[in-house]
Image 1 (tube, rainbow, N blue to C red):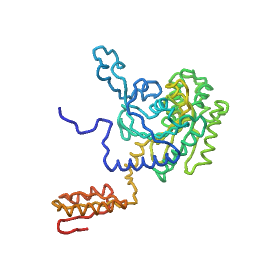
Image 2 (cartoon, helix red, strand yellow):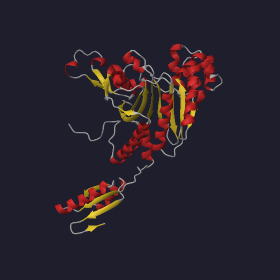
Image 3 (cartoon, helix red, strand yellow):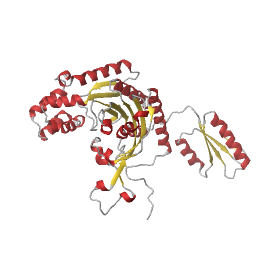
Image 4 (cartoon, rainbow, N blue to C red):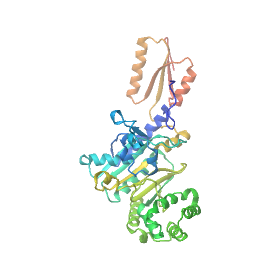
Length: 409
């Protein structure tokens, strides 16, 4: 069987230039979040299949990479369904594993717990530019805090991180509340069991516009009267205090606090059409869009019921996730280079260099490294020009050439 050198479809090899950018951005994100009191933690990439299929992940549950049972547990002869073959799967996000982690370890964690988790997730999605089957998520979550301080801190921390990794970019934070969406649906008279369908259609507002949403709602079998009432709510013609007073007050408090405390310039807007697709959201939801980026670059919300599915007791929880891969793709396409205050120098030595002279070169390189410089020691290729071009692309700005008889700068 011939070996295949290309990565699996939807996954990619990461070359040094992109890896340097990824490390640079991750370092900014981690440093920023730690400054807000978030603690790094980690969960396994494999989760129990029962957890992954708990009807909390929306459409992502259709995209799980399932892992077959092993050894004696796997019996192909008696298996009658997929459930008889798989007992675990690769995580599709970081939120569900965090809920399990907290449920298992909360006795040893502070309250509230401010979690920072960066890691790979997997979805068997259709690959396209900027969308992979394996990708990195950067999440911060506050568990155990029922008050608006959780939303306020999450918005302030995320916007600060975004302002540092994408300096000079204008962006806006849109905020809504699932309780407002539910209140609007009830006010309009939509059947209780059809609100998810209504929300899915409403979520298309930015793509198909108001008329498109009205048309799809009508095609879905809803009455014109309910549709008109609902769109009146979306247009702001019905008081939020009448529809969902607690949620309206919550959004007002969050906006006032963030606007009073923020150090970063961005717009904070209430958006009645914001839905977010994950089935586990229970309250506040938010998304960030940025100039020059298609779609959102960050999003999240409150999920107060998820931990209770593990423990039997609901625990307040709220989180924000940065669209790391989308930002990486945009910056790479724009030719972004990682800034550095230290020199990157390549020491190229001639083939056949005497051992004592090579040792002298390495000692000199080590002295420069002690000062914080990046120094590459490498054998000089026959095609020295091409070698230098490659190194220049990696950020090396100075070259020193060492020969057996003399040193040339």
